[in-house]
Length: 49
Image (cartoon, rainbow, N blue to C red):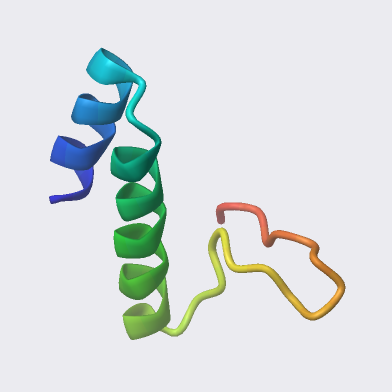
């Protein structure tokens, strides 16, 4: 699903596809117990590990 939403975004530039990509990515990271791409309370985004 993540690859599909990224592909749609790169082909169309649709912001909704990008936001869905980010949401799916963050949900996957939270299930694994990581903070990839998740903002902390100061607005900083964790780097990919």
